[in-house]
Image (tube, rainbow, N blue to C red; front, side):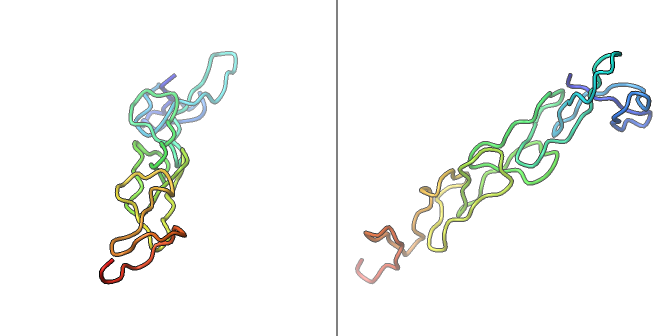
Length: 137
């Protein structure tokens, strides 16, 4: 585990007859069992799916992106925080959700729509709506 079969040029392969060696799975991949044919278990290095990442080599699983973090490509070595004005309440996601038009977040990596606050020059009224500040308010 943590390894995958490779051919003579070092490319990972799925079947034992094409393999000449095993290599350590690189960051952004994990070792996945593809068969157990009586000769032993066969492993292949597979890319982490979007929403997951793996920063280490020799890994047997990819880690889900935490809340407030996303990964939108295969083979990610890290997840990135949602930008200002965005949030993500769930793990293992590929994209962030935008705050509504009159709201933003104060920091990157927000995890809840409650992290969306009124933008500058707006104030929240009693109905929790952002309204433009009037002079003297």
